[in-house]
Image (cartoon, rainbow, N blue to C red; front, side, top):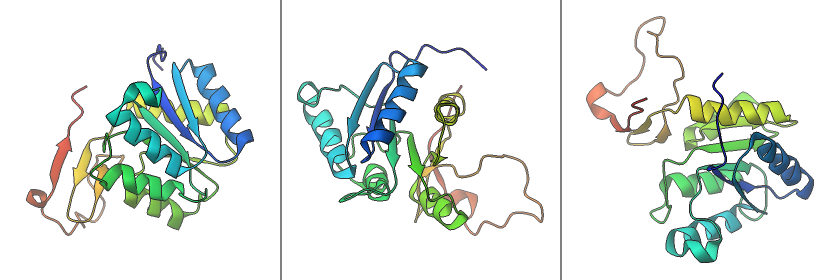
Length: 184
C-alpha cells in the first residue's frame, strides 16, 4: 500500500447523527485529511455545494474532493443527494467520488445505490479501518465514468475479465459513451 499525504484533500461529511459524524470526522482526521466540512442532511449538503460553486469564500470551502454521506436522513436523504450530485445541472462536479455510509447493506439496497452512481459503500457499524479502506479505494482505483440512456456514474464492474457464459449486456459497445478515462 502506498503512503499518501492527504492534507490537501477536502471531504464533505453528511450525517445527521452527531455521534456518528464525530466518529467519521475523527477517522478522517486520523488519515490526515486536510479539510472536512460537516452538515446534518442532504439538503444542507446541496446548499453547501451550490454556494461553493458560486461563492467559495462564503461557503468556507473551495472545493470538495469526496462526499461521504449517510443514507437515511431527513428531510433529504443520501440517495436524493447522490441523485442530485450525479444528475442535476447545478451540481458542481458530477464525477465526484461519493461514499455512502449505511445500515442498508442488503443486496437490493446496494444495487439501488450502485444504480444511482455511488462510488463506494461502507456498512454500519463501521470502523476507522473500513473508512480508510474505502478512501484508499477511491484514491488508488478510480473508476471511469459511463453515460448510457439510463445510467450515469462510475463503471459498476470492478473486474475486467471476460464474463462466464459470454457477454450478456444488451447495449452494443457503440451505445456506451465513456466520459472519463483513468490515465494512471
